[in-house]
Length: 265
Ligand SMILES: Nc1ncnc2c1ncn2[C@@H]1O[C@H](COP(=O)(O)OP(=O)(O)O)[C@@H](O)[C@H]1O
Ligand SMILES: [Mg+2]
Image (cartoon, rainbow, N blue to C red; front, side, top):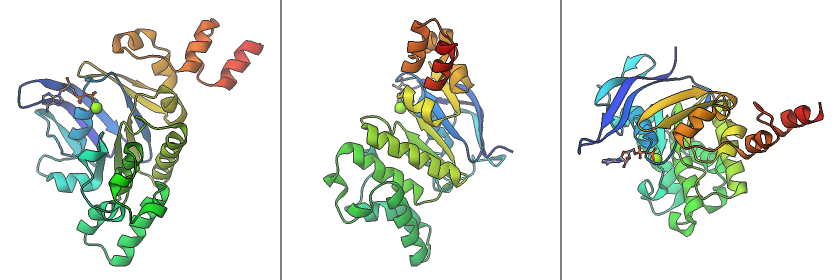
């Protein structure tokens, strides 16, 4: 059975604007899934429905096959953690350590277990040396890692990252890749919204494309990035490697190795 299910889910904001329309999805533990699509496509709205920050206007969200409508947002977010698009919407403590410890503290863990979770989350997010600092001593791009660590420390089965690659340099993007692998190795599901197509190709086996409120297609990077009609409709660009291949008259490759093989034949 899939861990998290969205069944014909729609959502309208209080002003009547429908941002998510009839989306059905299933997520398994241990998988890394990318969500791509233009700004305004409904990506953030859809993932907020997954952890109870927003509640569907139509359809339902299920965790382990059970409807979640009677669960509180706190109960849901223990199982499905959401890292905000803007870290400053999430950060409210005066040290990085307190920020990371806040979630697990509310779970009434033993002190030793709490410390272990905070240390492990800080370590994987590259924050071990700065735990005593004020979050705002770190630049915006690094503050994102504080909010990721804060969610990891709560140990949810699903981790949702909303545009973690925005404004990140190569080194930080590589660190994000490591964090995603660390989580899937622990059998967590990781759902990541991103505009970085190279990152999608490198880190994900399953890609969801959103456009104009709806899920338009899901598939492997190859199935998505060689569907030119879909890319056109969704106003998305192919990753560079696909663009290079296309300019050489070659189709359906995703890596330099695959390209090399086709060119050398
Ligand atoms: N609080 C809100 N009230 C009304 N409309 C909103 C609100 N938040 C977002 N929207 C609209 O919903 C649409 C989808 O937004 P969002 O889910 O944030 O898209 P994405 O994350 O793909 O950029 C956009 O047109 C946006 O303007
Ligand atoms: Mg968004």
